[in-house]
Image 1 (cartoon, rainbow, N blue to C red):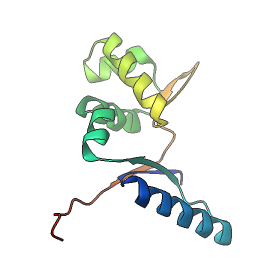
Image 2 (image 1 turned 180 degrees about the horizontal axis):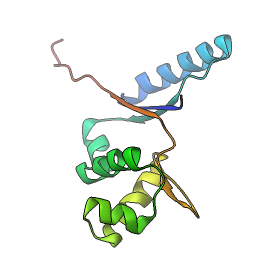
Image 3 (image 1 turned 180 degrees about the vertical axis):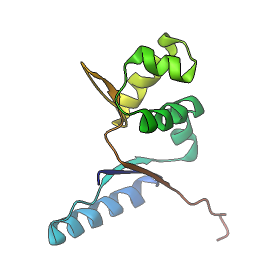
Image 4 (image 1 turned 90 degrees about the horizontal axis):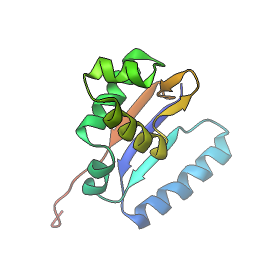
Length: 119
């Protein structure tokens, strides 16, 4: 199953995690999934807005569809859908070919923890 994990990590933690995943994958030879990392909650929510989350969810249910059909299904303007799809394509969450737009992942997991400074 192709999976995407979206998470929030600071730069040092992201580098350390990437190194550990590389070692684990090298040793096991198993697929570890895809990862999309943001440095802060603000960066995550700037990149994946509520409307974009809605598109992701809708596309997972619909499968591969045309831009116009996606606009119809979400009751949104085609131009706005186009802009959001391009943003999601740039992040690697959405794929598009001559047959339509789709999510290449069977599972998308979002993982982040917010802690107080005193913790």
